[in-house]
Image (cartoon, rainbow, N blue to C red; front, side, top):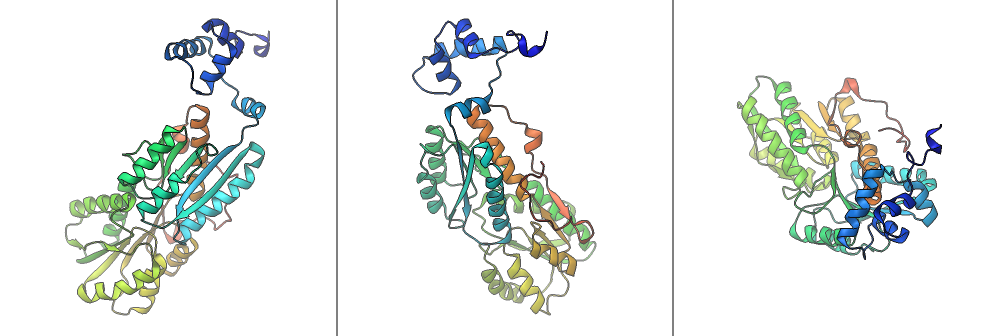
Length: 360
């Protein structure tokens, strides 16, 4: 007999209702996490589900109910290449997911502004949105706003920078401490036995991803390369113009800079400075995110290495996790792990147009 004809191998909600001794309406409420069911009854229904081995066909259920997933990405308003890449990936994936009844959109908030971020989160219509992906700083006001979303049944994931003290469901991004350690190991080995100073460019030390990268960087530099003196972080707010204006003063105060770790965005300002400053002779530079700008810098020898994370993987992972949480389905954590990629001039991948159908 075929498996599809054996009711014991394909239990239905009618079987759940019969085993749990409840109505079909009660089973539906439990399956969809709707209120109005006593905890003891919820436990009976869940036990029946486990005993029967029931696996819900979420696609059929959503189609029957006319459900459309609505996921919102909240992104910093800075127009650097990495953020533009994220926006492109969201737009392309949104076009590809229309046939799967899924809508993606993004809104902008001022970078490194927790008040603006909290206001944007609070403006989310919890009756119309199923999931929110947040790229922003971690503060009490942001944590409170995340709690408001969770209280109203909205899935929340943090993107690129984690918000671990909040009630967010999942973090999607690289291990930023490990990324900082990787940058230090690369830069220290490239410099070899040379002695001098190392400059660290960051966006804001209030941003968790930037802070974690600096922590990992300092750990390895102090342990493995004590002959190099790491300077205090220069906060450029991911603003290329600001970085270009700040760098001359840093150079005048520190004339022995032989290495630079650009741990955030704003590489355009650094590259303009390097191209016009003869006093800074061929420093070793390790930067973040493989973009057209950093590709060109690698090819020209202005950057020695770039640490990157796949923007397409970030967006696809966020959508998969928000859908799985919305449907109360398991998550394949191996698929959602974001790798730390290291690129040199010699191993850059083809500069292809992003494709929403790409894997993972």
